[in-house]
Structures are given as structure tokens and as C-alpha cells.
Length: 200
Image (cartoon, rainbow, N blue to C red):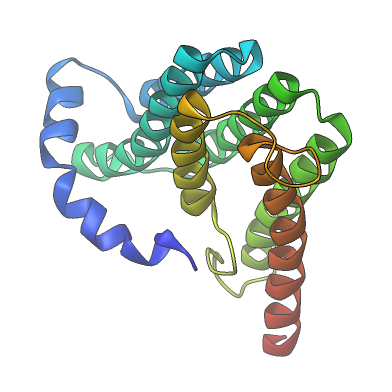
């Protein structure tokens, strides 16, 4: 399960967004920074844990994911794609991931689950870039990629806005999402490692 395989579909929908960013005089790096700030806003909304703010956080998470695609498309449109821009984008994505998970964690006070979730997410991303570093190529596949995580966080944010009662083992839908991120994040990291190991 990974939405990253549909990047070509997203690319076809990006035209108006790229044109708007270009007309506003934004650089790809500026869009990356805006995407990160949007993620921080989502984290703050989730951390407060109220129903209306969960819905706001969900929308901001989805906007973060979309802007994360826009910055690369804008770089190609402006002919300024660079290793520096790619590096900045990846660093800000990791900070955005940490912020979003920290916000979700604070909202339900499930800190052990939050720790497990954030380490799983970071290791998944680390394996993707480390595989690229050894010359195999950037790895986006696996059980749960970044696009999947953002989509799930957005969906869960909407659900939590209308239903936040415990579901299983005292965990509500946000706690269950953190448990999913923890389990599947580490499994995805292992999956990426084994795939790269076979290729090497």
C-alpha cells in the first residue's frame, strides 16, 4: 500500500498550483518552508485535541502533503531543480513528520506510542535516502510511505473530530493511528532494508 506510485497522477493536477506559486514569485525552497509551517500548524491543532481543531489539523496535514509535491514541480517548472533544494525538502519533511506525530501524541497523551511511531517513520525515511546514498536509487515503496501516512493522518483527524471515544485497549482513533505508524513504520523500514540488501 503506497500512494507514491500515483505521483504521475498528482503531477497532472499540479498545473494551477505551480502557476499560482510562480505568479506569486515563490521559489521552490519557499514552498518547502511554507509546507513545513503548515505541518507545524497541524501539529498545534492536534496537540490541543478538541474536535474542531482535529478537523483543522486534518486539512493542514493534507495541505502539507500537497505542497510537498508542489515544491518539486515548481522547481522543474522554473528550471531550478538542485541537490540543495532536494536536501532542504527532505530535511523539512522529516521535521514536519516529527511535528505532526508529536502533535497527535500530545493530543491523546500516548507518549510511548508516539515514540514508537516517530522512530518507525524516521527509520522508514532514513532507509529510503540511505538506499539512494549507496547508489540503488531513491526508495519510496514499502507498506506505508509518506503520502500514505499523511492521507491516514488527514482521515483520522476528520474521524477524531466527530468520534474520539476509546475503541480498542483504551485507545481512540488517534491512538490506533499511532500504533499503526509504529508497527508498520518499522516493518516498512525492514522491508526497504531487505529489498536493498538483495539488490546489493
